[in-house]
Image (cartoon, rainbow, N blue to C red):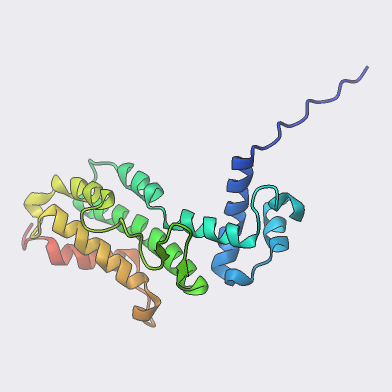
Length: 199
C-alpha cells in the first residue's frame, strides 16, 4: 500500500504577506502604482485571489511595501554585522555599500510612486524621518569609525554624518551625472576628506 506524502504545511497569513511583498517590491520599483494584482500574483507564484486573503486591495500592498522599504531596521542590522576589526578603508567601503543599496532602493521607489501620505500620517519621501545624525544608524557607524579616530580629521560622529549625506546625495536622480560614481569613487573621496596627511 502506497502512502501519500504529507501535505505541505499551509503558509501563515503573515508569511504569505511577506512573500507577496517580496514579489511586489521589484515590480513597484519598475512600474509604480500601474502594476496589477495579477502581475504581483504571477511574480509570487500564487493565484490572484490568494492576494486578497492577505491584503484588502492593491493600495494596501503598495502602502505596506513602501512602509517596509522605509523601515531602517534591516539597514541597522547590516551595519551591526560589519566586522569591527576591518581597516578604516574597508570599514568605510562596507558602510557606503550598505547605504547605497538602501538609498538607491528607497529613492527609486519614491521616484516612481511620488510623494505619498501613509496611514500613520508620515510622508513617504526621501529618507526615513528617524535617520537623522543622532539616529541608531549614525551611532552604529560612529562606533565602527571610533577605533580609527587617530587617523581621522573629523570626529567619528561627524564623519558618519558626512558619509551618510554624501551617499544620499549621489543616490538622488536630481544630482545624477553622466558618469555614475562607484562605491570606490565615494570611498576615495571620503578618505581624502577625513584622513590626516601622511596617515
